[in-house]
Every structure is written in C-alpha cells, then in structure tokens.
Amino acid sequence: MLSKIEIRKRRAHSITRIRVSMVITGLLGFAAIGGAATRPTTVAEIALYQGPDREQILIEGAKKEGQLMFYNANTWMETVAREFEKKYPFVKVSIWRSEGRDLIKRVMEEYASGRFLADVLESSTGMELLYKRGFFQEHYSPEINAYADDVKAKGKTGVFYWANREIYIGLGFNTKTVSPADAPKSYKDLLDPKWKGRIAISGGSSGPRWVGHILNTMGHDYLEKLSRQDIKVQNIVPAALANLVISGEVPLSPTIFDSNMFTSKKMGAPVEWRPLEPVLTNVGSSGMTTKAPHPHAALLFLEYLHSKEGQQVVMKGGLSSPREDIGSVEQKFKKNYLEAHYSLEEFEKNYSEWEELMRRLFIRKR
Image (cartoon, rainbow, N blue to C red; front, side, top):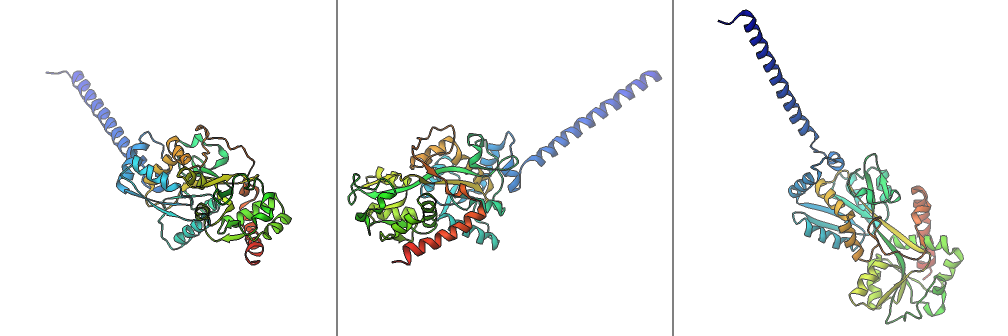
C-alpha cells in the first residue's frame, strides 16, 4: 500500500500534468483563433496585408476571382495587361480606356449610383481629385521602395496611388509631307507662314492642358499669333490624332505623345517626333479602388505593373519609367510638369479658363 505522502505526491503530479495540458491546449486554440483572425478578408485588410504568406494569399484569391477590371488612359497599358495575363493566366483583364477626365467622370458616376466596377485606375490626370474624395484604397507592395516619394501619394503604411509611366507631348509629323530638315524645332518655328493651315492640335482634355502649358511658357501674345495659323482642333484623344499624322491627313501636330510615334515608327510608319522645349510632361499613376470587386487580382496587377518586369514592358511602348533602379534612357530636354505648379483647386479653375481660351482662339475663330 502507498503511504499518505506518496498518494499526495501522485495527486499533485497528476494535477500539474492536467494544468500543463490545459495551458498547451489553450495556447494552441488561441493561436488557431489568432491565425484565423489575421487572415485578410476585407478589401482594406487584403490591401495592407504584409504577412509572409502575402503572395500566396494574393495568388489564391486571384484564382478564385478570375478577373480584373482595369480603367486606364494610355493605349500601351493594354499591352501591359496582356503580358500580365501571360504570367497569371488565371486572371482575365477587362479594359476600359478613355481620356483622363472622361475616366474620372465615369468612376464618380458609377460610385454615385452604387455600381462598383473598376478594380484598378490608371491616368495622368484627375488622380488627386479621386484621392481627396476617398476613391483610392491605401495599399502595400514590396515594390514601393523602388519609387521616389514625389511620385507616390503616401499613406500611413502604404500608398494610395503611385507613378507607373512618364510621357512627353511634343511635335509629331509625317515625313512624307514634312521633311525632318524643314520640320519646326521650336515653338517659334510654328509661326512660320508655311505651316498655316497644316497644324492640328488635340481637343478633349489634352487641348486645354497644352494651351495652359503654352500660356505659361510662351505667353498670351504667342498664342494670339499662333491662332492666326488656322490651327485645326481635332476633338479626339492624342492617340487618334497620332493616327491622322501617320496617315498624312494631318501633316504635323505639337500635341503628340512621344510613345505613339515611337511604336508607330518601329512598325514602319513614316513619322518622327521631336521635343519642343520646354516639353509638357505627363506622369501616369495607378491605384486600386476602395470598392474593388477583385482586390486580390487588383493588387497582383499593381505589383506586376510597378515591378522591374512590368516597367520593362512599359518602356517597350516608348514610355519612360519612374522606377529608380531600372535605368530608363535619360530624356535630355527641359520639362514642364504643369499640374505641379498648382493646387487641385487652382488647376481646376485654370483648366476652365484654358478651355475657354482654346475655344476663343482656335475654334470660334474658324
């Protein structure tokens, strides 16, 4: 028989074992609950998640979503989207493209009606307006550190939107109708009488911006003189105007994106592009919406677009990369970042004035 002392020792040992077992079980249970709680579920949680399984979560989520709606304002972005699909074939990218102001208007109308279609927005205009009105979801990406602070709308731990391309607006001309030796080399050269009736500029949102750029850099007197050159205003986006230059219907235009001429020339089109200094510069940025229907796919796409691989695809379209470690070809000309000179409210006010000035000088006059 066991003594009373031995019985007490055994009872104490059994109680200790039970308590240890309960503690371990509790810890395991807590860990399981904690693990489940940290797995992101909402758009905001997914967007800012930085766990070690982030990439796995994004890929698994994107496979379930299977699609992505991408609103953008640049023709080359479709090529980027198709290359993304090759890398992630389980995501189908649907694209809606228009000028920046039309894109912004569409998004605002959709949100007002409770229709949330867009996952990712990309534009060179209107991004700050959407940001201030709460349309952009702050998000994290390990690629963020490769971009300078002045091309990012930073949040507490991530960004709301960040630059993914830089393009330049200058002189595009058809070499069959205008020889490179004769083509204007400066804004003053556009005033030569031989160009009267042969110049066109883009309407839409690009036209007023270009008028504002010229007003700031060349002055009102220059614009008055230019208006006597019978300038045609084509109410189409710059890419469509570039096509008219390619066909020869428009001999030359000072409102042509360098990227449009770059890609067209590579395909054999008889075109050239040259900077007229200072060059009006567009910075295209992108971000995900607060109501993104496919948040995993949206983040996967933004990460690809801003990665070295994605930026190399961007550069193949003649666009420059704002990424600091990719080695873009330096553009050796003076640039004018028009929006950088104004607050959002000032820019909106001035834009309306430039739009009216364009109508008075180049449209109503005809």
